[in-house]
Amino acid sequence: MSDVSDAGRGDPGASGRTGGQPGQPSLPEGGIPSAALLQGRREIVILHAGSLYRLRVTANDKLILTK
Image 1: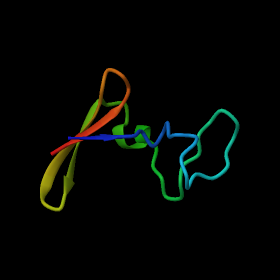
Image 2 (image 1 turned 90 degrees about the horizontal axis):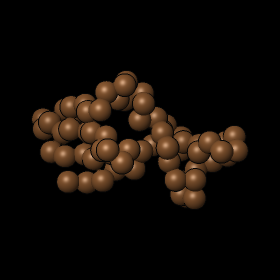
Image 3 (image 1 turned 90 degrees about the vertical axis):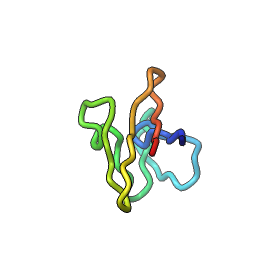
């Protein structure tokens, strides 16, 4: 089980981030906001290399990716 940070929320202090508007974290080039993936759902299933993974939002608004 892996705890994956929410790309839509980001870590403003993370390296590789470029400028943006004050108060809003910016995405690295090619980044996808989590809201675009989840589309209002709390969980999605991802097929990767023949395996299924579940990406879900926890009660604390974190992302968990499980196989």
